[in-house]
Length: 215
Image 1 (tube, rainbow, N blue to C red):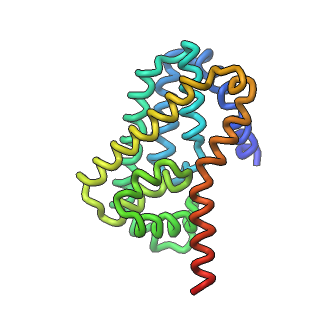
Image 2 (image 1 turned 135 degrees about the vertical axis):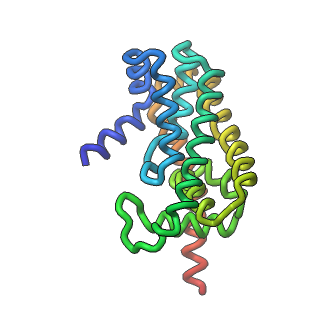
């Protein structure tokens, strides 16, 4: 429970915590941010990491000169791309074994099943769409690996999704993060980002449940 409390506090006050990291670690912050984005997309056991709000906060702090915005954008595109590739390979080589177990430690089987259904509906486009949906973002490349999507096709959609995800969220923070209202109400902005990003998944879950009830 302590970990959950600390995670919630980090997400809600991500601008302050990120600034503390920058002040303490300096240029090593770039490596830390790379590792966070890589881990969120690279490992199926870390779907809880705050990708969207983190990108916005990074952009906001870059506007103040704490980070180089163009360097960090390029770095995080690489992190998001390579993280997905690692997840894809994990899915390809050990995914079928994981699906064979009823109880999977550290991985909620329900997430895997829902992501598999999502991937079955959208195919390769799921790699791009899933990038903008928490939880799905972590599991889509894993399921794509299990589904034997071709390497070339996955790499193309993976790179496209990384660019479309990192650039807008980071630049939104860069352009709007230091507006007085946003700066003074950063926690509310973060909550708004979280709400907007989970809304499509929420609607999809409700739609699926209604469809099952009608069957």
